[in-house]
Image 1 (cartoon, rainbow, N blue to C red):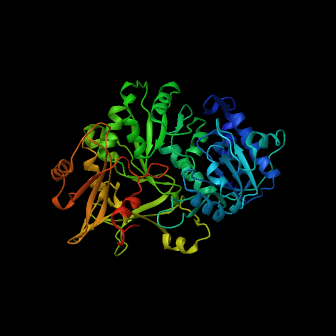
Image 2: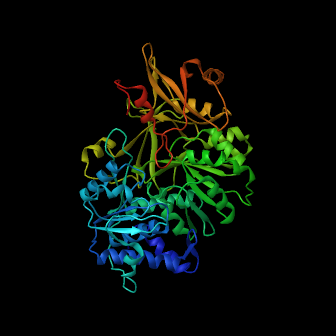
Length: 530
């Protein structure tokens, strides 16, 4: 007997065995797993009554609220496709995505609906469902979320046969120099990525998980599924606010969360962090950009966070590597442990095969921690392709392998460590210089809060590294001081040739540095932006 793999089955299981367990906490609201399952089914039934059929697309533009969690379970249960939208995008990008995705309906938070009001006439949306937000109103023509699902109260959820290889979610990548791409993820890819999250981030029944990571970002990295699978508790967080997060750590007994290195940085540099008293260590998964070892060390020392490094892309659901911790590492000092935790690591149990290959001959690089190559992967979590874009799909998936665009080395123990994105690697006078290596050194400087290293044009060397730095509040540093510091820790050819200080660095909604925006400032009329 073959039963389709779908993460939706975990909601059925949780409602069966943990009906009175608190499933979702959202501010003052509490929902048990029985109530959460009922509300999700009501949403699905109401959508069915409104005309949504299998394979139709429904967009959602919601922050981390119980409405968003209900959408993840209610929409795909119809055999329809959920299209999570990044509400921080421009109206232009959102308009493009909504039209490109072929979404018929849109569930939108009242606070974030305003950006769509001026372009609603250009959108193909047949019905707007408005999730309430305190203090916010919208002129979008639509029905209140609670009133909408109330129409399905007492009705049976329609029975739909699901194919594990049909699309569950259509997740859009952030557009940089081109339009965003729609990544087609199936029930199977979501299920197996959720299983990886569940197993490797050690999610258990008694966990209380804080959704700091936007759920729209690759389905919360799979957290929307894994927490339900364990019967653990989802704690919703509308906005990333470090003092609020630290307060929730204590008041709700948070045991686990995920976030980009930028979020980690915000937490450890929050002034109230020194006053927090945690009764247990909190496990935190981090990814999205290679975290500096110094940042990991600070997070563990300041807040006692047990940092767990994972790696992946939207195209891989997203997890394909995790930094497995071994007992033998416990004997190492704190700096050595942090350096290991900064590595991307090894394959997860359920994702398939990942390796680093030479860009010239395509052969796997030597496991010596030196030979540079590109990370490629194949297996159970790789996307079905880019929606309506066979050319881009063919560029990314070649000979059965997905090419990530990340340059890395493989250490003798098989641990993979990213050196840079292909587009971020600095090639100066024929020498490859890793921007992440320079950033890792600079993060150890006590005055530096955040840093981005990029290539800038140079008449003699073609391009050279430049450091763009955000200092801690009240801290001071000069360009010469920074250059002298890096010169003491790096080979001379890797030392940045210049330093700029800024108030803040450009980031995506998930906290990933947008280096292409910085490059645009220095390559005007030049070639390298990406």
